[in-house]
Amino acid sequence: MKLKSSLDLERFFTAVRHCQGKVTFETEEGDSLNLKSALCLFVFTAASRDNFAHLSGKVVCQLPEDERLLAPFAVPEASH
Image (cartoon, rainbow, N blue to C red; front, side, top):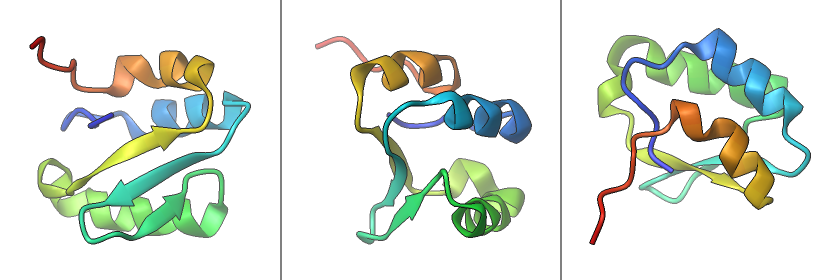
């Protein structure tokens, strides 16, 4: 899922902590940040601080119920 450019990081990170499975941010370059790791959260925050709208990548959830939990932070997918 792609994240909204107007993301409330504090609320997003709280929701991630409530997820039961693995939650990662996958960059277009192939990097993967574990969003449950304090170090990765620091890197994600620093990367998103100046240009969040230009941060390329998507959040990948291991479990479908975690996707539903994080859905309010995602850009709605276009219908085909």
